[in-house]
Length: 70
Image (cartoon, rainbow, N blue to C red):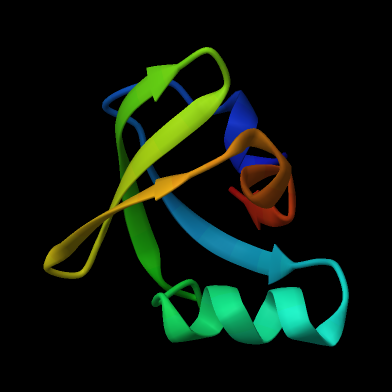
């Protein structure tokens, strides 16, 4: 399912990153890599704040749709 379907407090594992190479590279630089466990901290009108490793990162709805999680 896309990351946007996750609720605040959910801890999920990244299964796949979709989109163009530039988008996948940008997300990888932020720590969004396949197999990484992330936590949804907050959701505000589709935009998400995500805990990745030691950092909190805000993703807009369009980028969050590119991250497929389980």
